[in-house]
Amino acid sequence: MYEQLLTLDKLQITAPGSNLLNIVLALVMYGVALGVSPKRFKDVFTKPKSILLGLVGQWILLPAATYLLVICLRSYITPMVAMGMILVASCPGGNISNFMTSLAKGNSELSVSMTAVTTTCAPIVTPLNFTLWGTLYVNFFMKRGIEVPYLHIPFNEIVVTVVMLLGIPLILGLLTTHYLPKVAEKIKKPIKILSVIIFIAMIIVAFVGNLNQFDGFKDFYENIKWIFLIVLVHNAIALSIGFLLGTIFKSDKPDRRALTIEIGIQNSGLGLILLFSPAFAGQNALGGMMFVTAWWGIWHIVSGLLVATLFQKIK
Image 1 (cartoon, rainbow, N blue to C red):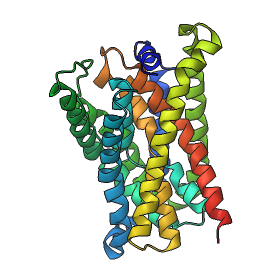
Image 2: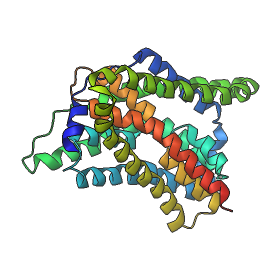
Image 3: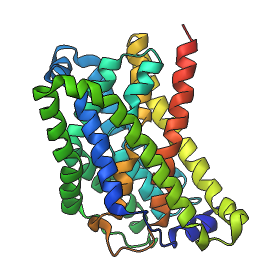
Image 4: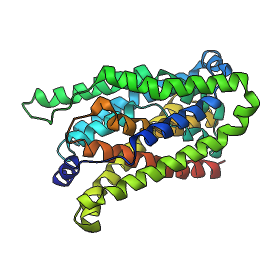
């Protein structure tokens, strides 16, 4: 398993138009902002219990659990695969979580509020979490005299990139909602659907475009199957954190469902764009990080729909 993942690390992954990828993520963030109003943030303070649980799960428990997971799997996964998992765990919630929560008959207001808060704070929280847990991971090996591939964690560059990709679209979306509320209401759903479809299509195109680096489909499957398994386990842990938080602190059923889905759906698109951005330019052996992040972008939609359908059928 380790050797096969090491093969993925060495691949030189190319993006199907990094500028287009940036535009798609900006469109996603613009769509998120169209569903945000000042009332969402007011709810954070007037009904703090559930959203505080969600933020603790999103910002603290998920990255911490991811760190413990990659340490436990250190003999089976490469450092770059581990760093990809840490990067995903550091990203804010994904915008499709709002749709999933609605489908699951969960608290949509809580879901939208959490997405709004985690996305708004992402320019600070995402670089901080990735730097903190990534550095702890590297130090874990260094203290034991084990060499790990060099990876410069560009904190300042990540902050600038996230501000550009999230901050500007969010401001534009909030302005549209405030000054053109009817227009915002009319376009927010089509924009969300379109951006998700385009993003998935681009990931598929990227996979297909890089198949020539494998010796046929069998070789591709033998190398990539472990990424599928790793993401499956990682995503299951993320979903479980939300559900257990809601259960332990006796949140009502709609809130528990919203917490489960919100923490289980990550904006891995942001992580993928960061890897293709100038912040990581010139760094080698990022293949494992990219495969983990890209597959998360597809798998969490599948798992989110499965969980939402399950919740829907449970009264």
